[in-house]
Length: 467
Ligand code: GLU
Image 1: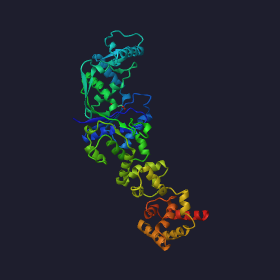
Image 2: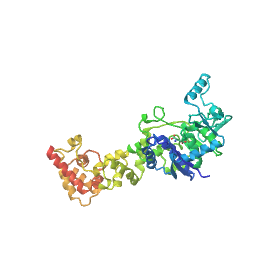
Image 3: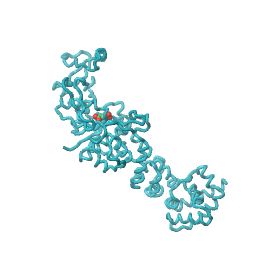
Image 4: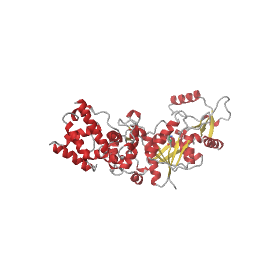
């Protein structure tokens, strides 16, 4: 049997990290077993399923690199098929028209509450033979009345539901549109999915869906209900806790692998290993090893992982993702030193790509203004002769590279009987506008002769004007 899994989000405007974890588990499980991963967009709620919110999901999946083998399938394009299945259920006596009005249903529930019974539809239209004039009926599924349904869940074990607890669910609305439980069963069946991995908020739907499968003469898939993710206060993770959208993690400078690595560890572990490459995850992950208990989102740990990934990923890979951040700052990475070389100077320095982008702006854009404190301290009468001396020395350098440049700074410091910092800091301010840069030799090399000399000249003029 080929393993086939799916991710079936309802577009809400963004891809939630909880959804992304479900998608990751499904993707890993399919990849591990050489199976297929299907993307299905559950877009029947026409108000929320705007093209933008559908795109937000596709964008999130692409950024995470969770590529799908089939799809995206859209439920709104499958209405004919749902109707066909509803008709089949009607013809085979598994479904019936229900003409009950809202008032009648309310009254029924009130009565049940008064009798201390659990409110549920009592199936009174099952035996109705006449239509009610003027009423557009819904269609209900005839849920079995006897026995029980066992959801064989690979995470939670067997969960048993008594059929007497499950009422006859509405499968088509008065306008004929199908409801969630119907569409999901038809799709999972038609798409030949073997495993349904989804949030445990759907656990209560599973017995109803299993009954529908049986009525359709189909074998239900294997279920795995993944426990929810909590915020640091123990409540279900929501916008209230800060960022929950996958793309906002990109915006904050996370690498997709770091987020995936963080998500896979939410509810799953392998000894005390924390860092997993995608290949390792694929090899080691198994859906039955996922915890039953909910897990809490911890931003600190995610940040730590991101830092590990920044330290160890290839400069090319980091540059690929960093480009986006530079573009956001209106910086063209092609208009300066080779980005991979600049990245190498930052891998030990930045925890996020936002930090990295901020740190390297000066390589690609001339300094417009010096930081006030930095210029007061380092661009003044005392540093003027040092900068003039450095300008002279650097102008004479023929082989413009790291060590040679470093030696010149050192020689200048020695000649003036000063520590390195006294010479290096004014140059840093001249080049970057502030006091932070990678070691000076490599910074000068990457800046290039022309830009370095002109930045120092500019600083000299500035001191003359201001001092
Ligand atoms: N569309 C549903 C949701 O976003 C998921 C349905 C399912 O996985 O069965 O919650």
